[in-house]
Length: 520
Ligand code: BG6
Image (cartoon, rainbow, N blue to C red):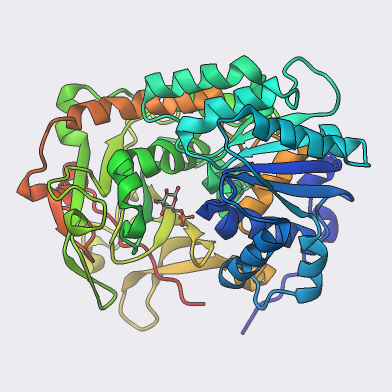
């Protein structure tokens, strides 16, 4: 039976109503022949176009070194769309209209002539707004970010101190590889663009369920008043992946799980889960709170490192019935590599709300499930009335935010097992996005591109946020440097990571809860 509970439409508050209209603009993708453009950016723009969210006039200009024409670029993107579009089949009529907006500009990103050609092309636009409203998307390797921005500036396409229209620079991760390099990159970019013009992407912030963390916390009195050390025993934030590093061995050798996932996605989720309520929904107000939270993470001393941080690397094993190579055997990976493919850590936040509450974070590749979730474990009951029948310990209540897949939220609590004997067991209440709202799951990049075009920086990372995250992560990185992996740090593909990750929680009488596989 399905209970229907009619909601009063008036209670639906539409936060987006305050969003600025998106003005006509040109999206220039630097490094357009890379994977990101075909897999994420163009499918996202196609869907925005299909859903009539693109501005009335726009064009997408791809800049890259390879020789291509507008027509051949469009053909390439069309077949990529068949593979990567979240809606299938691709709507041919919509595609034909959309494709008219795609242009390719061949050129070397280090040559001033490329930017001059770009300038001329833009100057020829009939619509005046298309000559000056520019979204400059850096889909290049990070080493080129500084150069591209400087060249764009010198060609007169980017105005730092006002000027006509707007220009925004969208930067993909990795944003530096440690604190000094992130600072240097920030300096390079801010020589030619104001901080308000720089939109640093963390695609986790574009996910519906990640945005919902704030809505959930600050629109429900029932949970927010429990959201503190009095009621919460600990948090578990898991981002696990069934995939190995695949073809990305070269990149991963430089990154590792700490830089690839913890510095950005996990710390972003943590900051939304644990921050104080912002004074308003303004981008700066929210980002102020996130930075404050990141700065309140207790730095790890050398002694803490052994007790609070676990790294791991996968060895050969079986994931979902499929034989997987060990990391050291993957393409473009050093056969003696000490790069971590798994990280688990326990951290504390030094503020009034969270004093003494452990936050456990873990992420890894080649794990048994692909799932991202935040588990909030509440404190146990102070006294067990049913101890004689059920033992001294009842299952503690837990709330799980299922970020992906099976997006939703579930609450676990205890209930009586029907029958004449006294038996208590955990039961669950579950909210599923699919069941409640239908299968509307826009890709993170759709939302992020739209917000960048509208000029709302809320879902992007501010300079001080990036730096605060590196500050924390750098201590861990330094402690690992030059320390070869020990046998205990390997885990077989298809398992939940090294044994030490279990011990990390066991020290406090806790245990990782296996992510829930929700069947709806
Ligand atoms: C990326 C990492 O930022 O996030 C990848 O570079 C990782 O290694 C990916 O696989 C995970 O994103 P998602 O959206 O699939 O959880």
